Length: 228
Length: 228
DNA sequence: TCGATGCTTCGGTTACGATCGAACTATGAA
DNA sequence: TTCATAGTTCGATCGTAACCGAAGCATCGA
Image 1: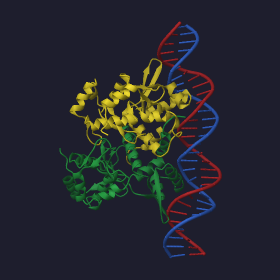
Image 2: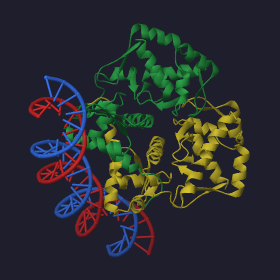
Image 3: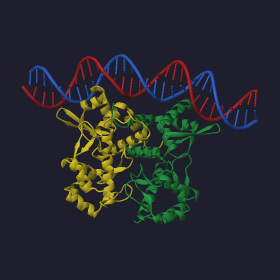
Image 4: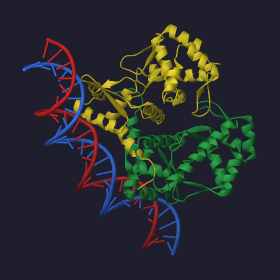
């Protein structure tokens, strides 16, 4: 009866606590099985299965069969961006489950946002890349500069692989804890992979938190300095 | 039981069709009475009242008493941004109420996004401002350049009034029909006001659509040219 | 003061959807 | 084969929230 897209459907998909818990769990970027998701949501396997099929019908998640396991993951980057912005909005209005839990400072410092780095470190990363003119552009049309391409190649990032896909290489994602943008897109994903591969940072098991090692912090500050 | 903000609460607030209808109606930027909102949502006044108090408790909307009327409006810009991005997401996944209604082309061309201009014209506006170096910055840190301040002053926009408030002057808002950013913030609001005041554009009553006059199109193209 | 309009609150009905038990299918291991 | 694990489907229950009728306030005009 009304014109335009129907926001109520996605709203109600995210609106159920069990589904919201599953989605937040998937924000870790890891693909999880139905049993694991049922566990984090605190429901039985049957109900979880029902929820998961609804989420998949709404193309919020996708599944991949592997042996007798079914791995579920967020459907694409868009879902991650939407969830992160929803979290920012929720945090802003005081919709928190419990006031700043124990792991909260760690999450604010550095965490995984679906497949890229978020939190203080994520924002600092983007700030530095812009200040150093590795990335340029306004609004959401960000792109690597010539110097940027050289720098990334020097870091061992295969740019041709990144640009081959239809996914944008650079894009911004609103950080819920910092209320500012950090770097998403395939480059954001590649850089997080780099940090983890080189052992500069480690993922906290069972959490979105990312812990930088002493050496990792040093390398990070050296490679991505801030003007101030 | 889980860390972080609770997205389920806002999700369920938006997830109810009646509430979603009201919120979309409020995206027109106009403040509406409870009776009007009940009408657009297709429910009685009593239920509307209940929904409105829930939305207000969630600080998605705010109300202003005026005589025996109660005017409801979106609480702030953040709500508008969130709703617009939700619409983009919904449209992207085929969550539409009816396939491209009659007013749809008009909406895609130019419409009000809470308090600023969206649609093709909105995106072109931001593109032009960036290309002409009226606005500069990366990510979400957009700002007027020196030349930009002069241009806006020449248009009769009182910049000191805009910068006085705590609201950001320039910010981006993801356009659901164009899938790209347009200009929001107090400057975006001021520019839309300018177009309407000068009679370059007229609002379609009872809709978000904005219709540019012949002269308005000419002036718009002259003031905000595109490089291509 | 009286009536009309705008909106809220209360109470009761109803409907939808989340939940789980139980049964069924599929994959892998012994 | 047989058993165990992973997951879906079905059916029934149950709670919650949307909904409306009716009554109750509040504000305005006469």
